[in-house]
Image 1 (tube, one colour):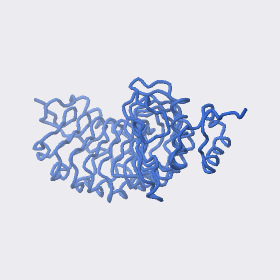
Image 2 (cartoon, rainbow, N blue to C red):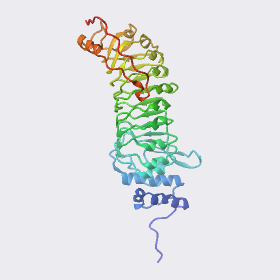
Image 3 (cartoon, helix red, strand yellow):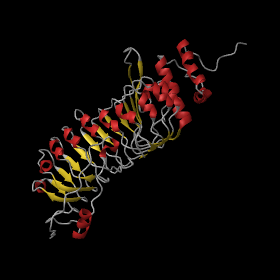
Image 4 (spheres, one colour):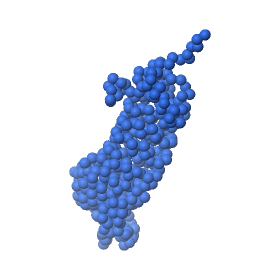
Length: 390
């Protein structure tokens, strides 16, 4: 009696060749625990996608409370929730998986190495879930990946160096995870448009080559930069940079004069650090600036009138420093905060004794060139002879 096959085998030669991928990498063996699809799949790229997504669902996702992957079965991967197909770039007649968007799914699990089979993927968004572990090494095969957003998860370990191998990457968002260690200098050599690495556990100096980055938005907030200072190379970002947020990163030293070159920046936030010295007069050249926050530092001296006269400046926060003079132009800004300084005649300032103590024993001059920054910051000027607070 002729034995009947339990399921039809319709995979041509390219299908078997793709299976060889799994035998060469041990982590792919688990995917062979279930049979190939019973219906034919139109092309080898969608077959690879089937294997990758089934491996993710069956072996790496441990909880899916909103049912995002509940319809991830059968050969038609383009109908799976969160999976987006499009004609491939090299062959418009071949449909392939071009995007994955599982944002806000509260999904738990990890990312399997099989995801490296999705070689046409341009967008990978999984923010606001409970994924843990590391980014797969096989992400290096995603040569077309343009946007990578794994923010607000539970990823850990060193900076995911695999992103340094992605030639098409423009948008990188790994914020709100538990990555730690050093921020590699190479990340600032990537041709990115936006870089978000804030709210992790990085402990690293701010690399000297920060100015090499062509990003329009750079957010490093809430990490630990070991009291490093801002490199003078930041002036090289003048043609592209629009927003930079370095809040609460343990910056030290002084602000470089090269900030004045950033005439396209609209948001500049270096609050809650250990910055000293004066605000550079050159910052009066930041003609696009709308929001400026230097609060909670140890800055001193006078507020340059050129800053307060910037044409687009709406919000200027410089509270909790040791400034001793501000221009009347500053008082005319739509939204400003100058409390807890040493400015005579202004309310809610530091006490006379606190201000005298600071100016009587100024901090040592800071060598900002230690990390490729600007020249030494001059000591603070002497305080006003008489303090009077209403």
